[in-house]
Image (cartoon, rainbow, N blue to C red; front, side, top):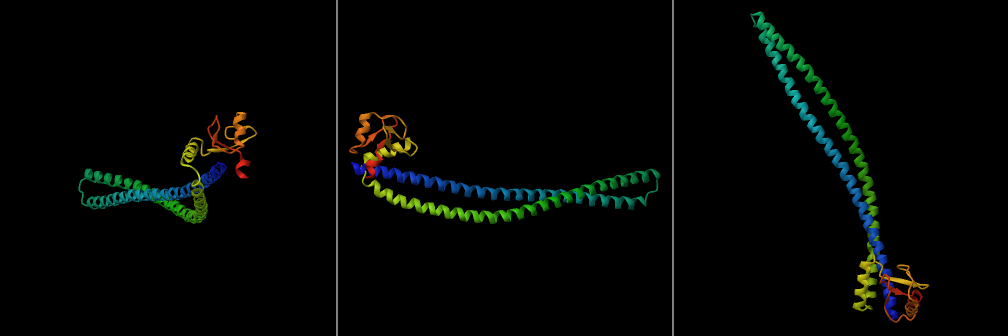
Length: 238
């Protein structure tokens, strides 16, 4: 039984180490995902700005068409003006021309505003594209570094898994079942040290008779308070 308790203690150490490595790996993968999200956000902002430019170009196109139409109207009206014979008709056409010229002035102002907005948006796109290129370079370097760390962790996990499989072989199925259940219930810690009369898992005082029994290391004994498996470290390390 002493060897089985020693194997349980070693198994706990291996599992905690694997838990730690898995946690580090998860953190690294999370960081990698955060970098990808940062790139995606930068690209989405550029795409949105390009859509804004496209919308401005379409609005400018509509204004250009209206401007051309108004200029054609003026040309026709001015031609017609030369053929008019009555004062009343002359005044009506002149008013049309005046109104059209006013509309042209307004359209030209709106077109200039659109051109300015387009230039500003294109400048913003160029700036963001330069920032994105720099960010992509930085992210690529960071991701390569993260990947190296992940691979190193995976190597460590693989080695521990091999050792774990060998350790499990000496433990009865009933003990492994209890161990696994406790791991699930106690945040990964199923085996704890008993020291100076106390359970180091829950820090509760152990009954003296139970504590003394641990020195013999001849049975799997659990804490009456937290139900974790108790070991005397010096007994299983000898």
